[in-house]
Amino acid sequence: MYAIVMAGGSGTRFWPASRERMPKQFLRITSDRTLFEETIDRIKTLVADEQVYVVVNRLHEETTRNLLGSSNARVLVEPVGKNTAPCIALAAIHIARRDENSPIIVLPSDHFIRDRERFALKLRAACEAARHGAIVTLGIPPTRPETGYGYIERGKETEKAMGEEVFEVKKFVEKPDFETAVEYLKGGRLLWNSGIFIFTAKTILTEIRECLPDLHEGLEEIGEAMESDRFEAVIERVYPQLKSVSIDYGVMEKTSAMVRVLSGDFGWSDVGSWQALYELRSDEYDEGENLLLSEAMTIDAKRNLVYSTSGRAIALMGVEGLIVVDTPDALMVARKERSQDVKEFPENLEAAGRPELS
Image 1 (cartoon, rainbow, N blue to C red):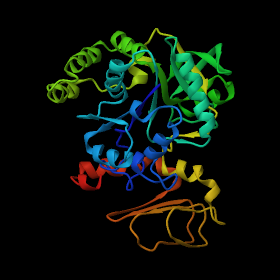
Image 2 (cartoon, rainbow, N blue to C red; image 1 turned 180 degrees about the horizontal axis):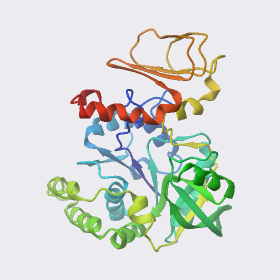
Image 3 (cartoon, helix red, strand yellow; image 1 turned 180 degrees about the vertical axis):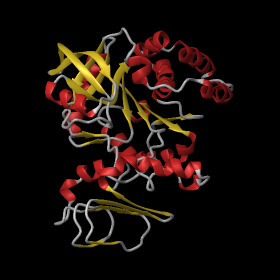
Image 4 (cartoon, one colour; image 1 turned 45 degrees about the horizontal axis):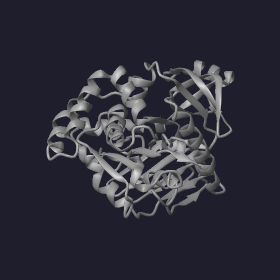
C-alpha cells in the first residue's frame, strides 16, 4: 500500500495566519501539531514511511522536510503548482516504477479527521475495492446544505469490502446553489466529495492517458528521464507546461472506469474557513462560547474566535460573532459569517503591490 499526500496548496481563507509561504496545512489550528503532521500521523498504521510520497511546491520544500523530521517519506517537488491531476500523476509515475498494482491512498494534507480508527478501517476497505481496478473515493454524509463542496451521487451497492458497503458512483456533481443543496440533504444519496481517492498506479495512469492525453504525454517525457541526470532539467521544462486541472474534473467526471464510493462517517472536516474552525473546536468554548486559541481577555463578549501569533495582549469587550486574527505584521477583524470572504484580502494585497502580506 502507498500514499500520496498533496501538500502544495497555498490556501488564502486563513489569512493573515496563512500566507503564500505558510499555507493552511502548515498551521497549528486544530491541535498543537500542524494539519500536515496530523495527516502523516493518521496513515502510519496503514503505510510504511518509505511508501509515502509527499508532493509539495518548491516554496514549501524546506518546511515540509523539517516537519517530516526523521521520516523516510519521499518528497517530490513541483516546479510550479498545477492543481491535483498533475500532482497525483507525478507521484503515480514514481510509484508505478516500484509497484503498479498496489493500492494508493491520495490525501489532501489540510483536512481534519476526528475518528482515526474508523478512518483507517474505511481506507483499508477502499484499498480492497481498488485492487480490482476500481477508482474508489470516500464520500461524506452531509450534515447541512453546503454550497462550497462538490457532491457524489451514489448508486446501488456493488459489494462489501471488509464488511463495509461499497456503492457505484452515478456521477460527480458540481457545487450546487443553496436550494439544490437543501434537496441533496433530504435525498440521502448525495455525499460530499472529500477529495480522498484510492486506486492503483496502473489504473490512474491508464485513465489519465484516456481522459487527459496531453498530461499523459508530458508524464511520459518526465518518466523517461527518471533516475537519470537529466531528470531535474526535464521536469523544470515540462511540468510548467502541463495543463492545470483537478483530478475531479480531468478524470473523475470523464472516466469510463469503475468508480466506487464508501460513506465516510469518521468526523471529517476540510477546515475550510475560520468559522469552520470555530465550529470544529466547540468543546473548547469558554462560558461566552468564545474560542480563544491564544491568551485573551473578554468582558461581555460572546461567540468570538481569537487566534494570535504576535504575543500582544488581546482584549474583547461587548462584541459578538467576530474573528480576530493577530500576527506580527497584520491584524484582521471580521464578522464570523464573512469568513469565506477573507481570501479577498490577499487578492487585494497582491493587486496593490503588497505581496509580502499576501
